[in-house]
Image 1 (cartoon, helix red, strand yellow):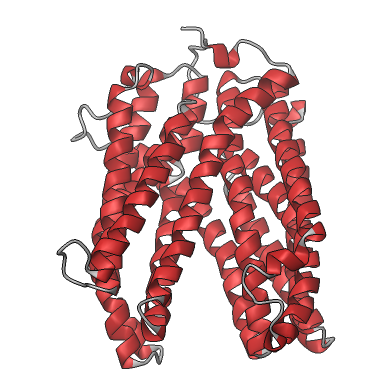
Image 2 (tube, rainbow, N blue to C red; image 1 turned 180 degrees about the vertical axis):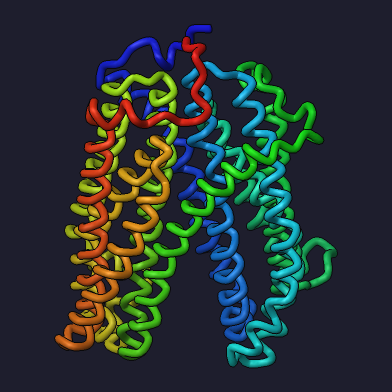
Amino acid sequence: MVTKVFAKSDITIEAREFIKLAVPLAGAQVAQALVGFVDTLMMGHLGAQSLAAGGLASAVFQLVLNTLSGVVMSVSPLVAEAYGAGNKHQVERIARQGLWLAVLLGLPMMVVISHLDWVMMHLGQAEQTVVLADGYLDYVLWGFVPALGFAMLRGYVAALSQARPVMMIVLFGAIANITGNYVLGYGQFGFPRMELAGLGLASGLSFWFMFLALFLYTCRNQTLKEYPFWRGLHRLRPQILWQLVVIGTSIAVTIAVEYGLFTVVTFFMGTLGTETLAAHQTVYQTVFLLFMVPLGMSYAATVRVGQWMGQRDRAKTQQAGYVGVASAAIFMAITAIALLLFRQPIIGIYLDVNDPAAAGVMQLAIPMLIIAAFAQFLDGVQRVAMGSLYGLQDIRTPMVLSVVTFWGIGLTSGYVLGFLMHLGGIGLWLGQSIGVAFAGVIFLWRFHSLTLPKNFARLKPETTSAHHF
């Protein structure tokens, strides 16, 4: 069967196909980030104690979920490559094992989440904070398996170039979550006031909604119905499952390394004082939201590179990666200019610029935002370059390089500039930016190197079949 996705290869067509994938995936990431922002606001209205406990519980849950989502994301490059190779049965087999992987990872992790109160107590958290946080976690954990299942299906439909409804499903899921927060958290329309427990229940229900909606889409969509992976779900294939685990573990470690860097930097900011931490949080929240766009683009780059990889077409594989990186660079350059031009109004979203008490935070936040404007350009490029490497199923080397660049270079230089050279929070931002810059250059160089004729011929993914389009 000839698919129009592979019919033409010029840059314009490639860019159009990339954008068709990137827009819904990036939109879904932005919607999810906005839900986290709204959740924080709604926790704040329950009181300072609830905000502290809910923020702690949500951060822990999201860290675990995002890390393990990296494992099931291994479905995306493998399905994209098998799809490009025209191996229909392998697409079905990978997706089927991907669902099994979500269940096999999710169920034991639910047990772990249910005992996180013990961990928090032993890390010195206040008893009342732990009790409130545990109320949230006890309910949200029931959404953990469908959350992993949704992450797997999102990568699966994207790999088959059918990601358009993902953004709408996430958007409706976000609306359901916020509505559930209001009804269950605050006790509206006759429901009991559950506070943080209600917010946890609303989040868990929204995960179920998104998973079931996307699963039904895969069953009903005309193209996706050709890959009925839901049939024969009892068939476990240990070899494919193990391949998913090996690739996914490397992706998960990379995610944990990147999240860990920003977590440690935030901790360092706190040691420099309340004003420095507040300034950092205003800048970080802004660039984190913007970063969701190149993150979605990176998923699209993985798919496009993986699809051409399945075709064994070196030039088009390389072109797909470059188009993805260039698209991210253009978008992030535009947002960087906007951050530089409107830095005071942006900080004013979080602070009252006319309040003399906020002057110290403003003075620290503006230079941080200037550095962040350049840093997020580099971060966008490195993330999409990494996604392109995932499309080549080059997973382990980026994991090692992430540790070296983010922690070895970024964190070390940040510590030196921030503390030893007494540049404070500005030095920490400079340091992590240096690490991101190194990562971007190295990932781009590696992608270019692997897609050279002499090296590309050695890349032989296991899922490639002899049956091409």
